[in-house]
Length: 418
Image (tube, one colour):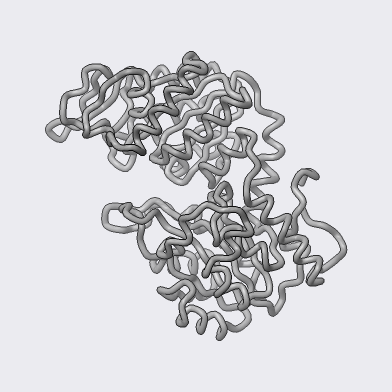
């Protein structure tokens, strides 16, 4: 790893017989019946856990957000994790209560315990400095039970939340294999990005995407930004289009997004490729229409096919393409068409291509096109923030955790990992 990253890995610390807390990100796409649609993140998380066969490993993760349809228990995840780890994975529907702490204390070498969804606790949704995260009940209740903390949740690496950074303040901490691989690969790819650089941004996390675009605006490290997903209505409103309540929430939050998008368009409108048409569902069928002719009372479910062709043309001209998030409701076949068309263009491109995020990776896998892109990352927001030039909270946390490890003399050698 380049010297800008200075943290420990599994190669640097002797963990045999120790009780370790492993923060992974097995947040997965969830179907309408609550089923896990793609287990790639679970498979990736198992790599580190397989190496902890001589430890007492406790696994922590989140799934979805409160109020969303994918905010579910991790019980089903445990069975899939067990399949990939190759040894039993226990599950407990508790995170830091007496039941969880009792099970943690009883673990034997080689055993794995998965705790319940961390976002059941309101503390986990806060964003705060590392030292503040360390003061939360979550960290104070659990940290005395462990000798080390392993951060392997790269998809959430742009978050400064208690389960992600708080433990590094008080425990020897190191990077798991996924974090190590992602940072090493992306660190080597960044100098290879060629202009023109095109970002294709979709998905549902509007606030995250706006943060990335604002960072790109400051750095200028972008030539074209394609706007899709739930970001599209925000930018269309910012440009002056008046959408119905089916597509926008005229509340303080949404209006704040629109104002931020308006400022970005004032910065350089020519950088943005906004939809010229969209798709709605009418009488059970897909109907494409220009953005200024959206039928009253119908929700946008995809960017239109004309827009998809415009995006494909941009991809063909690009030197580098970074894509994150589906352009529409890709879980429904009729409204996955734009996403699939653009993914095919990316797969056929001769440029440097990076696909990121669980949902878009799932779509790429359905096309059997994973080997046709330069790199597929498990992360969405974390990757975008890193490529846009922002320092990730995970890096600060791991560097702090490295200092803790040196103080407590758990290093295997005097070498410094990372």
